Image (cartoon, rainbow, N blue to C red; front, side, top):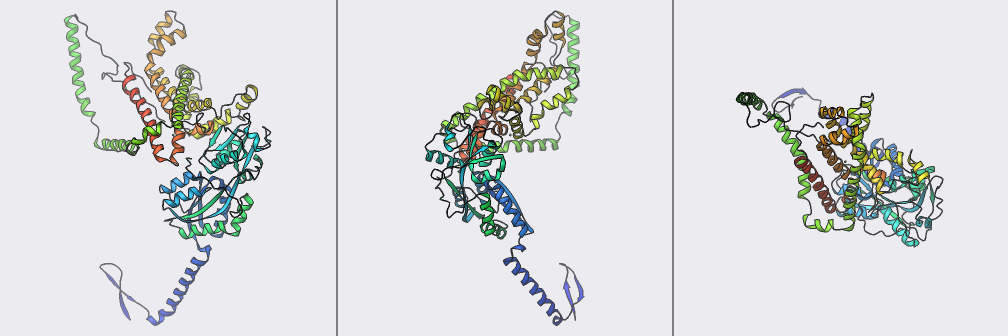
Length: 600
């Protein structure tokens, strides 16, 4: 029979369809196939597929990586992506809306934070972990027991107090009745372990599983069970996950016998017999621009115009008037062409909005009422004082070393100056954390130069305040060098040459003529250097570590506060913003009003 089947909103085509009786076997076959496919999707995990995002504590890195590989092997259509870090940081990210499907933490408190925020439902504890003492390979400090960590000569690394590993370390020390003063408090257990692996500390308190995963890089010293402490690991599916079925399958795999075998091989204990400690509620808290000095010009490419002294002859007065009228006539069309096109004005407005909107949001959300209380806390005052002290010291060091370097780059006729300039300005574009690693490899206890400083002179820089100054100097000095070099290149050298012909020495010329001429740019570079040093984070935490009162600067305090007290993080950020803004305003409106052009 002939039927009309619509193929569009306004048209139909004629099509000949088979008789319904002939379609029945095909329909039955399709339904059976769909039923089989549906059954496979619900009962057979191999039919699961998609991208799964798992956020897990740093101590689960090796174990969950292996479990993820197993899960992908069993589910070829599935792909598991991991994000490892401090559990408190991950919990904060989830609460703030970070896309995730599964969350596994080293503390029940972190999971409770996510659950209370309505971001996760039921969770289940799947393992427990205990602390142990990790020492570098060969045990250079000859640490044999937990009590040896109380020796002031032994350098110890632990986690920050509000992280699970840091909280457990404090409990272990209390149970053992010993007082241990660590040289650094790292943000998570992996960062603590890395300081031991690099040999920067004599010992560190980490989990048993971390020592086992490190292999021959470290050695473990067991802590007596009667004074040891443990933590439990919960895991759960994030509410609103777009792959909830796949996420639950991964959780089931972790809880399966195969998953338990992987956990046991890694050194985890089952939750039933872990004797887990009851941790206290976790409040764990756990960065190139150059300023350009624009000097007003008189429209003729010079920095000043000749003034007419009184009593000039009439002809000279007439000539000056004619020249002035000529300049006025020439400046009229120039002002007309200086109008900004509408497209550029729109883009400029968008750029200003993009740069100012985050700052406005920061000021809007600042807890102004609690600001005095937050800033009066001892830890905040120590961090603020340390930041200003180290930034000033780094700026002084940069001036002492950077000004001669800028002079060499600007005045030296030797070949290779271009390569030297590229190397000097490299920290401007180098990620600060890479700079921290480089400093560690050079000046660390086992570094290229640091090993000799330690063995010959007993001088060490990591985990000390001078180490903070070195890290800040490394990232901030190029700002001063680039600024001063540009000024030295553009300065008029006729005065220097005249002084030299009159018998002045090079040092006298530099001190009496060159430096005064570049003083505005030197001040500009110094302020930029100080501001950059004040906000340094990556190189500091990598090279100098984190310890309150010694190496914990304001940026580190902001980072740690953001994990458990956002109001405090915002308040500290406002303080840093105010310090930087004040510096730039002074730089622009007060100090930089030179009468000679400078090039940056």
